[in-house]
Length: 361
Image 1: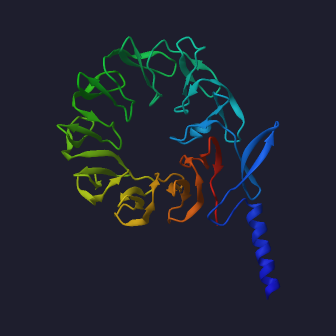
Image 2 (image 1 turned 90 degrees about the vertical axis):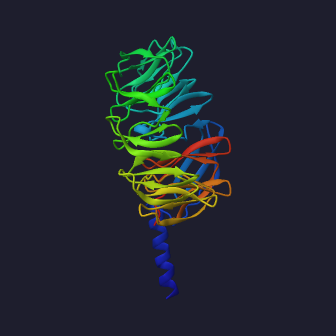
Image 3 (image 1 turned 180 degrees about the vertical axis):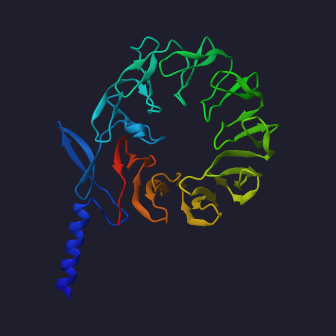
């Protein structure tokens, strides 16, 4: 009988190794490798190895957004693909992540100090001062203190006529500030919702949170107030619900303004993958759309779910859990990004690298 059990365990162990699969939680073994006579921190898991070799990554967003990740080596930024091959050389002072096939790059060698780069390394150098990423085919830019928008060819399509800040386009509308009030324009630059709000958060799911006289509500795309101004704060709708605040307590409403999840939380973030991250007694956990606590608030900090995993912080280290709250990657990182398309960025000490989804049994 003992021989049989040992035989089964051996087969199981070989299966795990052959399929790069581990029992959870995954604990990466930290070793050192030498590449070109340089000592590099290496994470090992079965027959997988991950080099923690970069000086910096952009961890605030998904690292391989649209297939390429921005990486910093020897004080210069460039881009790699998901096979960790250098696609765009490290030659820029700073870069952003790709969005709608373009990324912002900053370099003193460019005529105006900045530009937009595509995935082939071609650079658009607009003759403007201010810049932001593309959204729905347009990017905000400024000249002599006035704001407008360019298209993906660098052509100015909305004239520089706004003296104050402008936002990104979402669902065909962009927020603009005129004087001390905010309103919305369409892609022709026409003001379609007059500036009368003290703050806005843009359109998502057909509605936009707006603030008037320190109270928040929601408008539709005609500018009509659909949900009354009664909240102290409000986030955008996501997956049919919006997080709202009254008197330092957060909960969720639906698009009719009906309270679906009582305002009982210290803080709450929008739903993603069917879960919302909530704060209870200074700890973070997760609820479902009925308001039921699915994952107990045991964490010092937590991200939203993405690709089926959420980053969680325990004792000042970050790891990952799955949707039943099981720790799938042991907390052992100083900083992390969310998983997307099977990858996440991580930081250990002063170096950065990438790990793949755990694929635990």
